[in-house]
Length: 346
Image 1 (cartoon, rainbow, N blue to C red):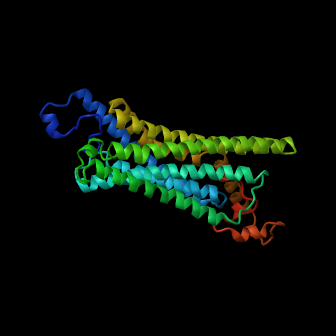
Image 2: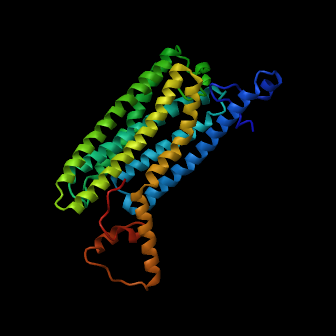
């Protein structure tokens, strides 16, 4: 029970000593208890949801292209940020652990935004290069993925190094002075390291994401108009709009939580702290529902179930339709999923 009623910034610490000294009112106890319960339970559900979404994109071969792989990296980074966030809910007293938690959280949050930028850039590139419903195979997919990996995991290291330098300057070279860090449950660095090492880079990345989304929408509209038949235009419009709005929803969710954290850190208002805690605790499950329960992924679920039921009703056969043998030979899991050209992953 002490973990669930641990201190969350902006609310008093509900310890036995605090209760004995009469420093905590019944209303404050209720507020903190409810908020702590929402944070812990919400984070637990978010972790499970992110694992489910990650397994979904790694299990189905239809989703294991460059777009799906970048999304899996985003889910992994968000999972680590969510897990580290739970560690600081009850407050961290050890200085070394507090400093490590603050730096780790800043790195993982920067990684989330870097992979979000990589995802939207890949979407824009696919829309620009492919004007047909059937996606074209990219022989340089491995090279593109390594470039995205270097950007997604490497760029935050450089930004974190700059934040460490700023933190050292503000602390006079003593990183173990964690009084201000513990004031925010070791979730944020001090002012200069937070503003110049996190807020400004995140703002630049969000501008890039918005630009890629806008340019992708313009290119999608142009390519839809190039389709010959009305049926092809409607189908492409649905698929392109689904992917654009999916990435837009994920961007809005993640950016809103980061914005609440920035307002809470810079203003110190209890309302922003409470909103940030609730939002950060629930953002994982919200993102997981967006990426794993949209209509395109559900269509893959149902198609797989139909094929399994159909294959169980008839005896095994070696017959293979024309043009499908090469695709079947490349499948590494759930081979029946790749009997037809791989669709756009969302």
